[in-house]
Figure 1 (cartoon, rainbow, N blue to C red):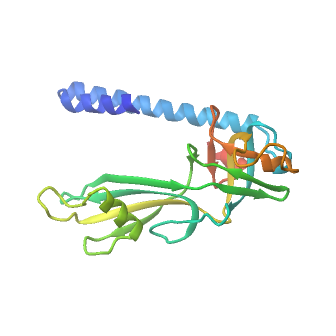
Figure 2: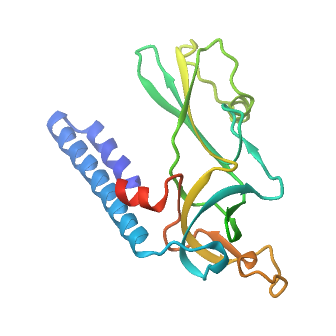
Figure 3: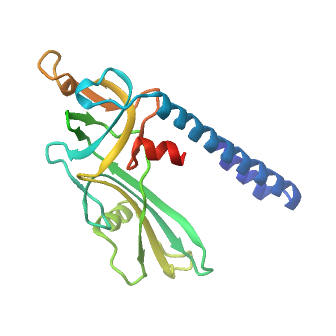
Length: 231
């Protein structure tokens, strides 16, 4: 990513022909990296059997189930105001030239459980690639912003006004959230649950936490079959 933006910067510095060549090369690198990731992910999904939570083994696993909050540790998505265990929003502003400009991004997650018909297991979503469909919210300069976003901007002394002091025409928020009772597919690493003392649990899955490791960590609202067909 750093290399990609570095090339974009060079494209802005050099002349038209050289700049276009650098930009084309940058886009080609990004497309190749994205295609390689998707190809590798598809192979991992196809080669890793879907497990029932009760029979989880340590290492790379696939599971599918329902999102359950951890001890009532429930978040609330700022725009939709819906209960969730993870949310992310991306703010864009439309300037006086009608261009949408990336402005700020923020995410928050909490531990949660995934439940199937055999049991439930703790999930630490930190570091996961989470595929969710965005819900878009539009705000005019005169609109009151959701409290979470307003607080975020105030704490960072950020204003969505133009350099001349005039407010931007519109503000757009793309919100992604992982809701309670939502069914999701997870590919991650089954490791030790640090919140459970060794030998104190009678169920195998109670001493396991799905987490980020060297392997893929991917969360999606699609089933395994749907993922393979769309990748």
